[in-house]
Length: 153
Image (cartoon, rainbow, N blue to C red):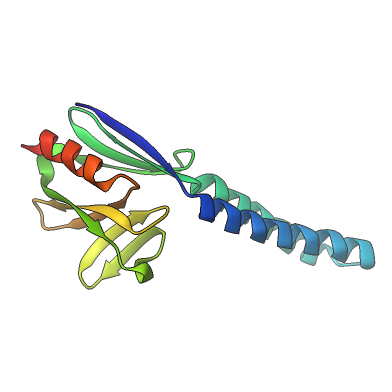
């Protein structure tokens, strides 16, 4: 059974768009009220707006897929992705992340693990044969856990 699921980070989208709107408003009002605003300030605000848009397009969703050989994850429009060989996965189990683990791509030092999460607290923790631990956020942890367990038997 192959698996493919995309989770949308609605709160991430809303917050990013709100920050975008704030900086766009700052940019427009600064130019309207003081046309002589130096080009360095305009360039800085424009760069910030572009970075915000890059973040939005990079992290609006998290897609997890499993085929015959790999577990793959990718954020947004595939700007960042990672794949794991199924034969290297030792175990998989549904878990709840602590609220302070956050969203996005994180490294956590105690316990040492990588976290890939777009929304919510549910995740599937995979342990690799080399001892590395990864948590992949999902809104259907039991389904992802079962799909992984079937593939790594």
